[in-house]
Image (tube, rainbow over all chains, first blue to last red; front, side, top):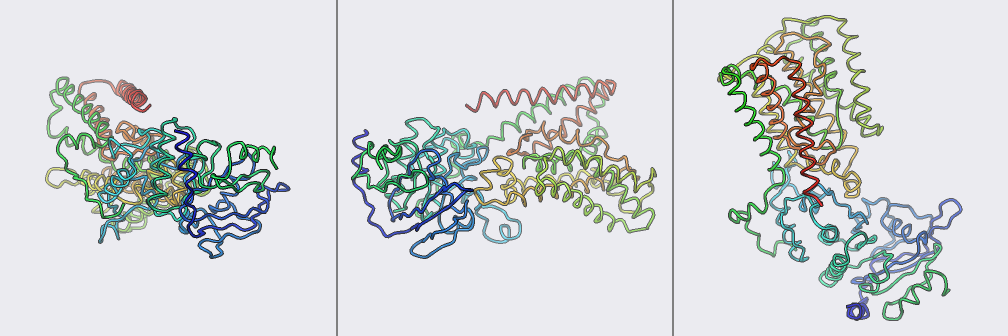
Length: 265
Length: 332
């Protein structure tokens, strides 16, 4: 299985145009250089793995991209255009969908409500316009279709998502990012805290969405296996600096681990 | 992923419906069962229980708890609580008395002012909860004494009486044999149920109460949602006051004392979660009716009032304990 996964990883398809480019990003917290002159690019249809030890700066880097932090200096280009990302809401408007570690779902609500969370579909006509009435039938149908395309089986669509397995919840969260036509999907430890089988399902889903819709992903993970299973390219962070930017086909787990720990400099 | 795929059959026979049953259905059925059991028991212990007068009386008494209960359901669903409503009633009743009795303001205008006073009290609570971010139980504990104090200061210990029409009619009038407050309660329930289950704001109230962080990350304005919830609670408290003042044809600063406990008990009995994210307006109606039937039934069966209080307390704790035990086995 691992070998097969590696096969797919090596058949890198990162040939699309550059959708996101970061140039010389810097972010300091007090005297600490959390992100120190980092540049990278992301191409359409590419899954970019981001690895590094705790405190290596990957999380700060991602927060700059998703508008949670403001950079001190540097430039972010979306589709070639220099862009200031002011807030997480702004990032979402720009097509940057983020799936958080804790999945970001409201566990007590059902799948349709979660898919449309904060973006509820209103009914056509005066009921929607003046009373804010939502189109439940539409939301339910869209959810049903989405879950079917993603091969997620949900017994009861009206049940709270907390009755789904952890992997299914994460799949719904990833599916939601894809449904809203994110131009770029950012995954923060997507397969943490869930069972091994379910981890594989979530990673499979990531690859499927990439293949079907050509959506690029940035995926942060501690898990080297996960990265090597799905990523086309790997960025290694260490002490706030980018110390490696390798195509998966051209590197090995040993090399990446060496870069993370600083054994290879 | 778009309109290309055919719509799934949404009326896919009995089995499909059973599979897609709504999880709240079980809670509502258990509340109905409890209500039926109480009614059956009291029909044996008291001969007069089924008389029209008694049934109408229960509905009439229950209506004020239902009106306030709809607002309380929304507040609990948003993850908050409002224990100040009794004092808001006292304050609003006092202001109604001052305006109509002392200053001769027409009843219809005074009713609008009452709703506005309620809304302002709610906005004050909402401001402290949503914007200053003080925990709701602390905020409303503070405003519980604050609003009551204001009511006593304004009312100066007076009892306002003999209100102008149509206020007494709103509290005590009948149409087709049923008291007006019952109609007001029914309309409030229909509106509240539609609002919570079928509107964008209702969804967002549930989302904020269910997982505030996820709601915020999804772009929901959490501050606005919470604030708005307390304002609705305030307006419905104002409406409750109108009914109470109309029924008594009197107003006093002490009005509404302790009502919050009764209202919260009805809402919780009805299946709304005390921890937010799940609200059942129809459950609140059943919860209020259960309390009404219990009180009247025990009274007619010759049980002294102190035992009624004991029974009410036991029932509330037993129902919540039972429900939590069941939920514990259902999830995980």
